[in-house]
Length: 249
Image (tube, rainbow, N blue to C red; front, side, top):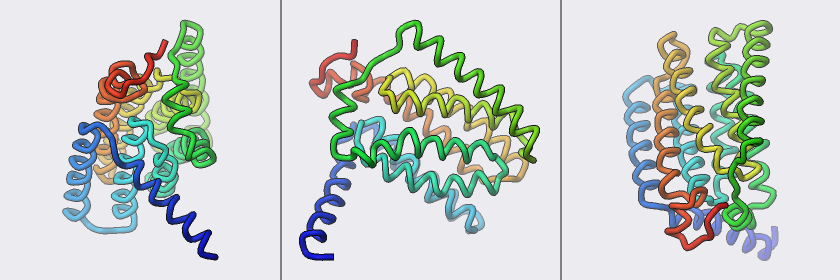
């Protein structure tokens, strides 16, 4: 690697780090609250590969969703790295659709950002839109179809002990990921529902001894992030006014 390549890579990583700056104060408060909570759970219990990857995944995952909230393209790398951790956790817990969920995030959220990392911020905040009646119908029907098909398939062909909990979380999350890719701000209604579904899924998983409580805690943090997004994120007009951006029509 020559000096020019080294300088280019250094500038790229410096730019990525800069994407963690300039967020609404609420985002930073939520991140440090989450980090402290997850760190206490991690060091307070047995330290295993599962708990270690859960801690790393939840730490990166919260940063990822907060960067999406702030429309910052560092979410691509954060999402990809957290997905690797969560895929292992999902496999270990036998929540197999949570693995497909993470893969769908990589396809709809992470890779599009990584392929256009320097332009994603501006392209996103300047091209946001919201549902008309047709889009509401398509999104709701699509979520229902994915739920029914995936719940049946995962129950029929695997030993997933919670197929319908797993399927609901997967269906809502998959639809939300597609909405984010298409830049619809209505995705946040689906993300809130996804967070609640994840909270139930991982709460049940914990009660059955197949995962740590950290995954359920992580889901609750995701819900809080989605609520915050309605007030400070450039995905919504209230947050756009703060940043001097045009309203979404």
